[in-house]
Amino acid sequence: MPDGDLNKITGLKSAYHAIAIFKIPLFENVHSLNNEWILALDEIQDPGNMGTIIRTADWFGVKRILLSKGCVDPFSPKVVQASMGSIGRIQLIETDLLMEFQKNKDIPVYGGVLDGKAIEKESFAKKGIILIGNEGNGISEPLLPFISNPVTISKIGKAESLNAAISMAIICAKACLES
Image (cartoon, rainbow, N blue to C red; front, side, top):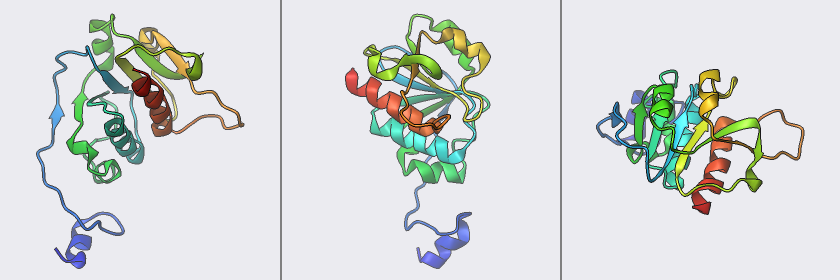
């Protein structure tokens, strides 16, 4: 397809030289949360963050992401673009995170928080759930009691916080590469 035609159908300033067509693989049912690393996203709002999280999950071999009902649409154009194709390989499950955590109390939950155990001192299990909170508000209050392992990314500088996608990447690197 000529570049001009791609530019006509995109909502972006410049189009990529590729088009992909696939069935939207959004799942509603969570069968089992055992035997793998799973991401749980609590009200992630920024499409760029969501796309980067999906792409990074794919990089680290995470195959499923649980999305709270308040997350940005994972199939919006900006999310799809930021995922760079990874969206076609990751199972996205929109669900009630509170209900899933209540049903799966035996699975370790590693929550990215500001006052947890330093990530470099945490011994990660072989599998579990990595919970990442909203960009501005962090992990919502009702989910906090289900975090069995609160982890913090140690800082050296003076920044108040890290981007949600960056935090997820650092936690996934430690968890997935350690197991």
